[in-house]
Length: 230
Image (cartoon, rainbow, N blue to C red; front, side):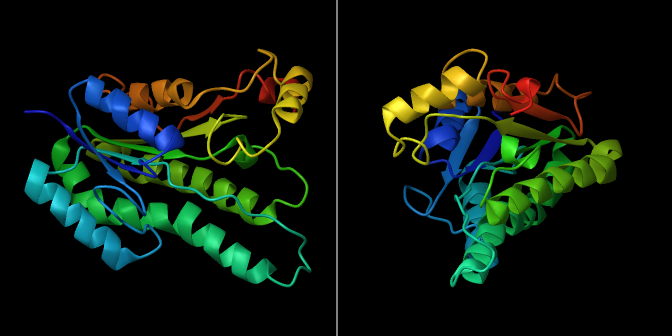
């Protein structure tokens, strides 16, 4: 019987690449997103509960949870809409992951090899100017991952955090290509942006049954950017 996975933010970018790679490895992978076959709003616990119940009915208990849903957020602390931006960033990027874990927890425990992978950002390891709502949400996701690893490691669940660097997703494609190239030449040792498929490769590796001793890890997938101190 195939293992069952839920990937939030699975309709595009890193989430979609993760769904496709899991499916290629005979995992029944279901994408949760605001649009698509399974529309779920991760900031709404009731929406999450309905979505998880539908997955159980159609595929069986959940063995793998990948929290890849995220939104960009920033602005000056004294900005008119700063509090609204802050609340939305935490609701989607951090609190949504918590609600997803709670909704899937019984299944993950029953699995015996439950896997949680939270997709943060290199912004969880440092920060840029005027990105505090996003940075705080991703720092929080890193801390949540370590808490999960500590609390559930002896009960068969591993929790790990993948921190993508500059990646070609919907969030970054709006940046002019010349600006992306200049940033990569200056800050990324491999000299380019990553692809969603490259990030998905690490995420999926952490979901393997054989990855049972990787727990509480925080892995930057950034072409060496954080190694340079950027």
